[in-house]
Image 1 (cartoon, rainbow, N blue to C red):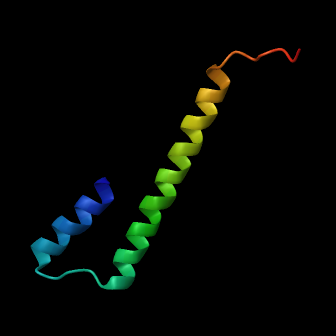
Image 2 (image 1 turned 90 degrees about the horizontal axis):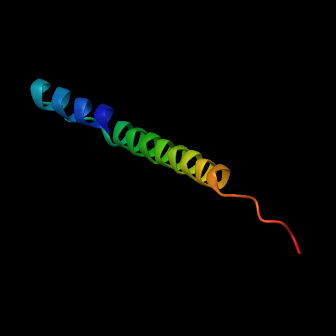
Length: 55
């Protein structure tokens, strides 16, 4: 999210706005980062759960 804020602030200072291609790349990167964070959180949760014995 910080990179997105920086991009918006830099755009405002330069009085220009990034083109759609740049915005799409930022959005895709953000989604990819969120997906990786979710996978890491899931892996941590699975590691923290006690293993159940099969009866």
